[in-house]
Amino acid sequence: MAKVLLERVDKIYPGNVKAVDAFSMEIHDGEFVVLVGPSGCGKSTTLRMVAGLEEISGGTIKIGERIVNDVPPKDRDIAMVFQNYALYPHMTVRENMSFGLKLRKMPKAEIDQRVDEAAAILGLGEYLDRRPKALSGGQRQRVAVGRAIVRKPAVFLFDEPLSNLDARMRVQMRMEICRLHNQLGSTMLYVTHDQVEAMTMGERIVVMKDGRVQQIADPMSLYDHPANRFVASFIGTPPMNFFEGRIMGSGETLVFEGPGGLKLPVPRDQYTFLAAWAGKSITLGLRPEHIGSAMAWQQPNGAKIVATVEVVEPMGAESYVHLRIADTTFVSRVEAHRAFKVGESVASAVDFSKACFFDPGTEIRIAG
Image (tube, rainbow, N blue to C red; front, side, top):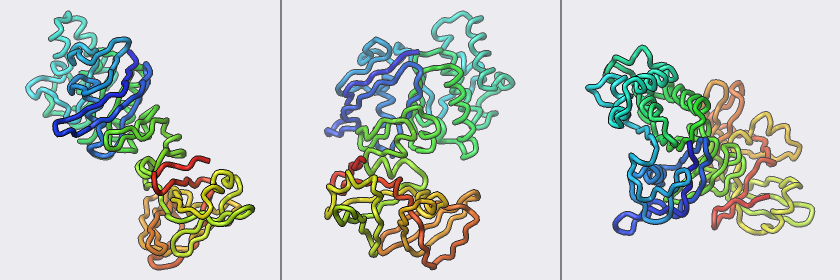
């Protein structure tokens, strides 16, 4: 096990295309960190630079106390699990898991012991003599993880390992990888484009966009206190709703005035930081569960949004109600038993104490 330190790491491709821009963070010994962001944001490139599969254009990468900028991948004491499993089809599960150890000239008895231990951890004992084509996608991915475990590396690297699995298997493998981390206590760096995976797996999450780090925080801090509009919209399902408007009033009364004549009284505990925005344009952000839910109706401030129902999505335990006010659409997450009709006008209570505000120019969150 080891910590991983990245200091202002860059990756520039020909044509001066900057894929990663000044990436800096410390991954603590035994920590599970997830890199998340849309396709092309630089997360996989960052992982591959840690692995040594991509040369860095600038900065420093340390694994443990050693700078590894020029160290070959095989000498970095890392193990990587890929999206496509990368198993040898002509080898059995045991042979796939032991192949790397044989290349290291490790004694056969120790190889067998490590393979048996990893197989027991991952529930692969009865499959050791099968070949990959006789396994399901989830079983193949477990073999790929087992091949990494037997090496007992300082750092595990996962590059979107669950992308090829169906929804049910992804959930199962998420739990297995988290259980594995708890059992091994190893340092893990995990890349995904799926924010649900990021939220459920990472002790800390790095949100990236256009090669740059947008925010590094634990899952709930990202959800409740996003640094900017991009993080607020990327983290959460359904994503945060946004309303463009102004803060109006002064002294004892502040009101957010938005589309379609929307007026929402600002709670007094938010006056201090919003008073400076009186008369200025501002973006209001509200999570779907803070509009129309039972908790929203319990708020004493009386804030409500009157809007037209456009679509209702029953999800079982809850429903997503898509609404429109003027030219702005938004989503409310409500209890499943509540009935809505498309085209009707509804007044939805707002839990304004959970609101986020953003500078419409910089899109940075205005902290209160």
